[in-house]
Length: 284
Image (tube, rainbow, N blue to C red; front, side, top):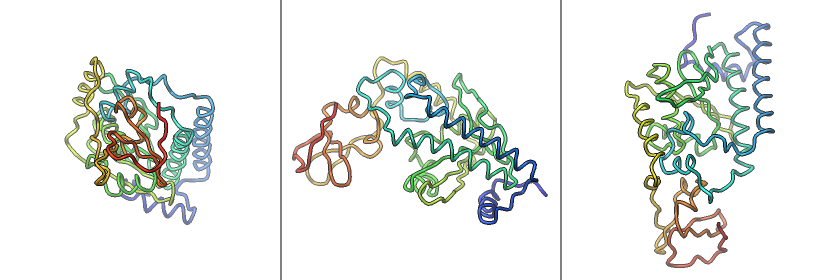
């Protein structure tokens, strides 16, 4: 059997899932199943032991690409920040479990998986990669239907629609491995679809971004806001966009913020000229 390439990955995964025909011998199959079962067990035990990960208030590979002001509050503290919800914590666990499941299927389909969770370092910032598949650095992501389509299928991550900094995270890892090609294996947790998004470039600005973020984190005042507020129709009111609405630091970031409960969710108002005719929620 010849060496497989990353471009064959999705068809091979689909074939394996449909037919259950693995591309390794029975002995290797059992080894892989046990290996990834151990990883799932480790994720479950970690989930049951962890609290809120407050010990991770430092720059690392997984957060270096996030907007500077949000990162400033993460690093330097924010007494008004929201607690992580139970839904979000469960989503983190789901991501760890699905990463193990997908990488198991990748190996069973005959593709090469190397350097799993290997630690790398660039400009003093450390991180742990998911894996190198067929020689390409790959990050495995479990995504909502909207995120799956917008960030991965439509390539929003590569066009700047990347509030979690996934692209810079991979750039840092790729720089550490001296690679000019990286990507994401994305899983739609609602539909079960998978998508492979690859980026190939000779431009990698990870070291410069890291140096700038280090400088900003040491300042006495936070950087400018990550995103502007926006008009709420023709009412004269202004509200937060979706990225700010989901941020844990919005109360500290936007002084005088008010929240109103609509049938389709909560809107956060930065300025109210016409009071909405819905319930106002108390926010700290």
